[in-house]
Amino acid sequence: MKIALVSSNTAVTPYPTYPLGLSMIASALTNAGHEVCQVDFLEKKNSLEALAQEIRTFGPELIGISIRNIDNVNLVSEQYYIGVVKDIVKKIREVSAAKIILGGAGFSLVPDLILRETEADYGIVGEGEVLIVDFAGNAAKGIYPEERLIHAPTGLSGTAIPSALYDERLMSYYLQSGHIAAVQTKRGCTHKCVYCSYPLLEGTQIRKRDAGQVVDDIEALRDKHNAKYIFFVDSVFNDDEGAYLEIMEEMIRRKVSTPWTGFFQPLGLNDEIMEMMRQTGLVAAEIGSDAACDITLRKMGKRFTFQDIVRCNDLFVKHKVAVSHFYMFGGPGETRETVFEGIENIKGLKGCVVFIFMGIRLLPNTPLARIAVQENLISSDQEMLKPLYYLSPATEREWLEETLTKAFADVRHCIFPSDAFDSITRVLHKTGYTGTLWDMLLKKKK
Image 1: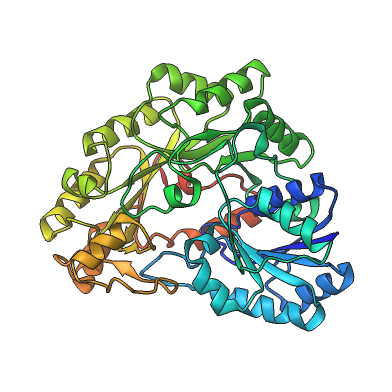
Image 2: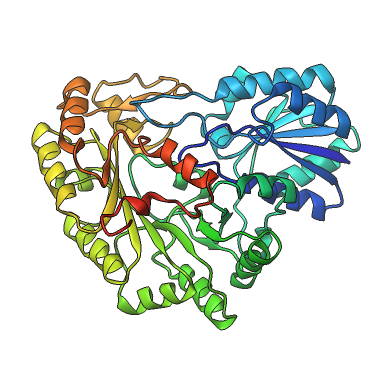
């Protein structure tokens, strides 16, 4: 069966990100014997006409659309993406009679509302590698489900999680933005952050990929596609169960060392582990600190203190790894006092870059959504498709924005609003710089 898979993502903040999930679905379908064409709306320069021409030329019998994000989760500068998906569906209908099925992390957050809004035919909720193969096999026989929403069963693990089928044309486009390539080493998240959707999307148990296959992916990206920088996209790279250490050990065994980064939690690291990661090419770390003082950290569901953040930060700096932090002000328990305490805590961090957000995007079925209902900030039946943010009742938006702007206006390595550095990043990538580039804000950098 001929199947077109379309990435609908249009976000370029802080840089365009390769549609990894789409390519994993493409891998599963190709392995099942289907002919797959990967199409990327961003690579088509957001042109509906160019997208329609690709669909018309390929002539698919089934079309999947991947939705990575609903919006940009930035209260200060909001962008909403589902309207783009709706336009894509409408345009495809003009040139193809094929059934359209939606999927992706963003879709799975509010699938019923997105399906209603876009008027697509079907949607897969959760991991799609198995369900899309079953759907395509039945569609080839003219058999379609009675229900428009199809829910994935228990998640995959080990070799059942396929390597992505990295498309050469798409990879060439994305590598123009810093030569950054995405790799997933595991799925699932054991943490209980009150705002986060990862446990809802991927489950609360770690499901690790085969370490050999992960390193195969890294070698292929380096040797075949000329990727110069790897981003491990796991929700938390240094998981409590130590799955990440298996990846490091396999890279060391095979003498694979390439510049890489990932998302880290502040706990569980030491000098020995740092040396191992440095040996494999670790050059930068992004810490999901999230809250800037102990009161708000506890309210966010974090297991660590701000002193743990300081120790982790100093460990990365000691081992000459560029480190960045992400903080969200206005969360549960936030008061004017915690805001001022958090500002001073952030300013006290050494040798790092800090990205600062205001407010927290509310998502269905998260503890934060329940907190918002309890505090009468939203109703229990509130729809959350369009951007909706939590701000502590003890703070006011105007005061908080003014306070954060004033506090960090002259602090070079602290970025508020969080997207203030994005345009510079895009320019530098176009001139040949590689990597995430926020490390250039460190004082020791030229």
